Length: 78
Image (cartoon, rainbow, N blue to C red; front, side, top):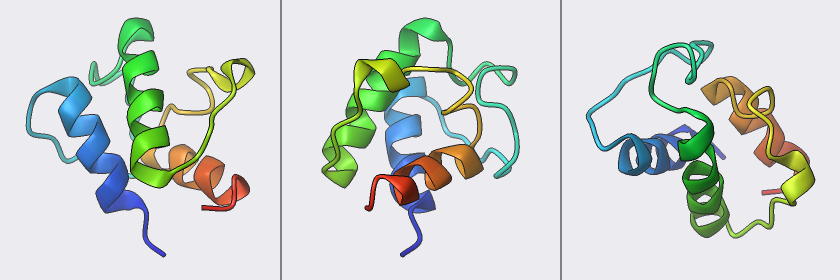
């Protein structure tokens, strides 16, 4: 199942602006996310995909790109 539309939906809600990042574009370097927005982004992913993301996984490295978010969600079994 393609998770990109759901990820973009959450990202757009958190960033509060239209966006079309490349799958391998850094969400942090591009300014779409920062350390404060990461918590909102992860919470949104939990709601959108019905997963629980432990605090120990709150890392910019794990959620830096759309590809990495998709891979993470795949590992969580969504």
